[in-house]
Length: 260
Ligand code: PGA
Image: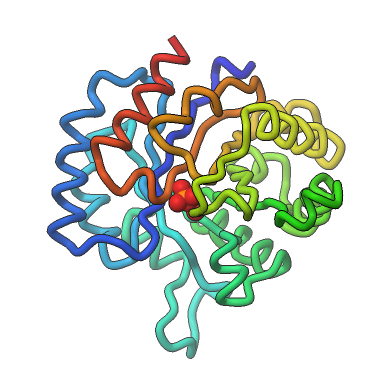
């Protein structure tokens, strides 16, 4: 069953890159991605202002999917400065990150909001990438699984099996984001296995198998090979380690070689 799934290699640019930097990166990606396995899906989550340009530039590359990094929880209205799911769809987004720990920390995003945003994205034809993960305090107190379960129950509340199949789970331990302290392959696999079992309990075995669960948090060229070894790991997401296109291509190639 797992062999049918597309394996994800995601780049989250966060608040980086001007227009010309963005386009240079994308052009190099297009040149470098041709030797990757067909089973690899490259999801590039860019700042809103680059979405249309990235989507146009990659429209003939079926392996490359543009994504956004956030969305508002209403479809329209008086929300100055915000962007809605229909607008993202219109600009070419195929994916959108929700519940990233930076949004949870700095913008008070919680699991109820993540749930609401995910439903609106799904209605607009965009696949949500839902981030869940524990803090270092929770891990040290052996509360990792409690935290993952608590987050998942609320984030996925009310989703149909079909909607869950389209949703990507991004396991990102908070202590690993931007710190250089990636989870070991064993820690990542344990968490992914727990999440898959939980999806089986909440939804069904089929949905648990079909849902892609990816790991994020200090993924770099030097550690990706170890991280991807776990059998429940369906992809990786890189932030700082992907800002340089050659590094991102190296990460993608490591995944491609591993799948061969
Ligand atoms: P990082 O960020 O790779 O810089 O740790 C990952 C993320 O926030 O998705």
